[in-house]
Image 1 (cartoon, rainbow, N blue to C red):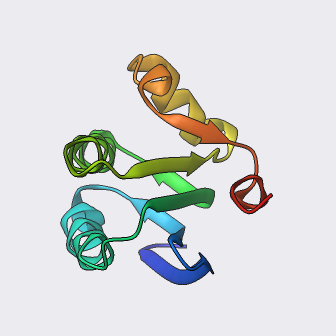
Image 2: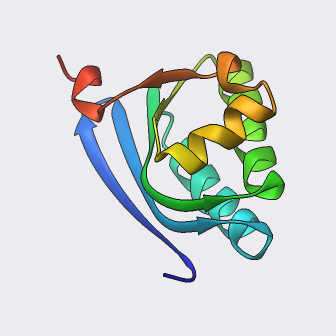
Length: 112
């Protein structure tokens, strides 16, 4: 699949999940960032980014995730990533930013 699709869903009254499907790369990173900023404007307490269906992540996509983390910290909001496939997780590990993010295996961990 080429491209990036986003699905936005309310998990709880103050938790929003954004599921990413496809490629978070230079071509799609800033579109993703703009959509994420729209969700951030809702002033929810937690945003969950579900990376399970992400097939590709490059440095531009990773930079947008790091920027989202920075904005969340500044706003006092929780940003949680659902771990993606091995290739996506490898990007986090190679760049040593995996420890900077709160990661879970499934979004259900946020509603328990």
